[in-house]
Image 1: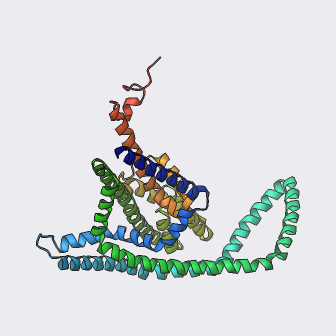
Image 2: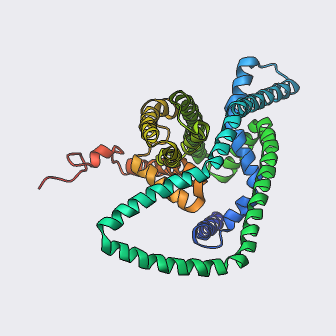
Image 3: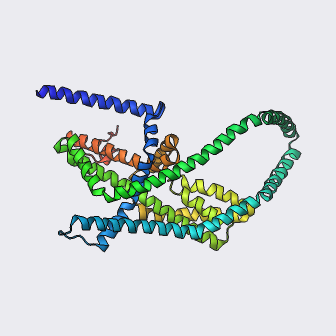
Length: 400
């Protein structure tokens, strides 16, 4: 009977391993069935993410406004949970109200100003290009001849493109309408996600209990502690990075808005939104936000554009050396090289969301691999300290 159970266990393990490999291959190179499934449950994922962000706030209100005591009834606990969720959402909506009342009017004015000055900016860029091209053509006659020949080819290609433009207008209109429909779907999914987040926050202890029950049913009793500790470690990495990075980006956006207003940079609200939103992307985010912002200011004043570049460099130094470490600490434990690799791989497969979540996912995998490597080394009677395997260490290369 025991041998039969071992065969069944080996068969289930082999099946699950093969299914995981096929699913991984399909996600990366095939029909992306997993991604299609995630698209289907996207509102629930939104709700889970929102509940994950708001859970510490709900716990804070419950702990400080209603201290726990052993004689509390279930109805009282549900009422306290309802008050905590309500206060958390009131804080969120109050923050967005302040942000909208202060930022949106100024952002609207900046966009209108940008649209009104498009012609002026076109003339400015045209003047720069004309003066640069005139200087190059006067000093390089051969280059001038080559440019004239290339321009003739470009005009012919442009004429062919214009002749085929009308049939493409229908495709363009379809794309635009699809974008509008995608925005509507996003809003609807977000509303469903908000409702789901309220339910998840109300039943988070029950969900956690069911998760532990599932772990006890799937793993041997002696391994349950390892699984739960690994889950807690993953939660520490994700909560520290995701919540900390969002808070850090909000602080950077507000600092950028205040300082740019004091320094009287043009398009201050628009620039602050660029810098704050792109700051959520580790490593590359500051550059992604600074480049379009610098270009916008350059169209108005090259001198102010130079001052803005200096300001952004100073702001990012402040963020990287003071604000970021205070909020994030070393939650991921990854080196700069692995952060870059995680961003590039995550962004390549999943876009902006992959660039953001790639770092904590890579950190969790790194922690898991280190755990297994250290466990194997201890089982062999070897030291898990990496310094012991470097030159001069107990297991490092010997000098010749």
